[in-house]
Image 1 (cartoon, helix red, strand yellow):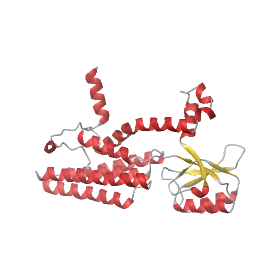
Image 2 (cartoon, one colour; image 1 turned 180 degrees about the vertical axis):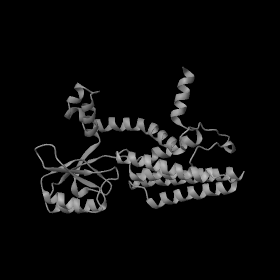
Image 3 (cartoon, one colour; image 1 turned 90 degrees about the vertical axis):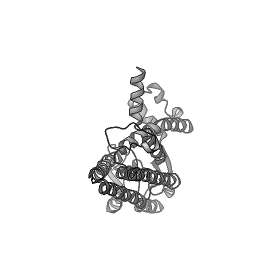
Image 4 (tube, one colour; image 1 turned 30 degrees about the horizontal axis):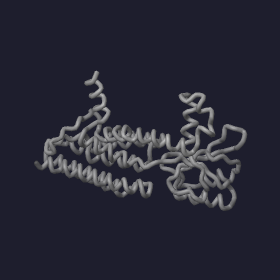
Length: 289
């Protein structure tokens, strides 16, 4: 009975924090680090209590291992611009609280569990849940930006890699004024020739921008954001100052993002009450066949 109570508290606290994170992601576009740290600390503490009560080290051991593995994997995906840094911390915090799937006989519920950490189930569920939304978003952006009107080559080879890349770049990118830049925005390749711009960016210690040598003959350099974390506050002020001093042009291209935490919340709910969505799909397919 005590164990069931602690499991239930873990589930409720994780759901409450995830709902709060949804509001932050939608309204402000970022997740507070402090709340993530609190959720992770609660995870370690609650699993330590479970270890003490049951005299079984597996609870705190798997909590630490699951947190570490999840952080490393999601950090690698963050570096590939799959999602933002806040999402990395949220997945890791969930892993600390619920390291492996919970059977909940006290709720008359038996979710389909997977062999990998619970956080990976949440991750896969969130991806599967968000995929239809991404398709609809892509169709909306294609129509809004008249992509096919401006890029007739897309029609000639829709399933060609270059055409698909052109389609994605045209739909999920936007040109804005440098004066409208905000912290966290992801900047696409910005080409320039001024060595002073290169020096200013590279001298900025708190930067998420990197300067590269250009491969074409039109410009010497270009800079872009390194990760999905977007530009830092220092980057934002530096770019606005350079624009005000007419060192760089007014227009800059950014990548459009969308709040991903709602998908994580839905993936979490499915994982808690139904289990691994990919396993459920495979099970139903095999059953039908």
